[in-house]
Image (cartoon, rainbow, N blue to C red):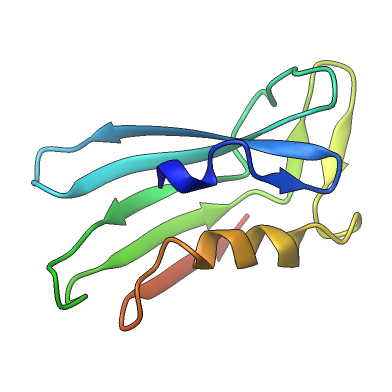
Length: 107
């Protein structure tokens, strides 16, 4: 999760927020964007439950919701229209070990 912090997505950078949940190894994870001025988006572009799982990748998953419209103070970015969604999912895929699973719901 921490490896995503500061990664570039077009002209934006990723800001990762996570909080440990009640079950060991589970985290509430949200991904925000920062624009070139360093202003953080009002809401996340991805938010969900991340599970580290076991060493053999069993129970390793990320169950999340994708928000393609990202709002900043004075603008809105559509990640699909700006061709940034694929790059975002490629970055998210780097935190899932082989055998792990991604579940996404788009809003």
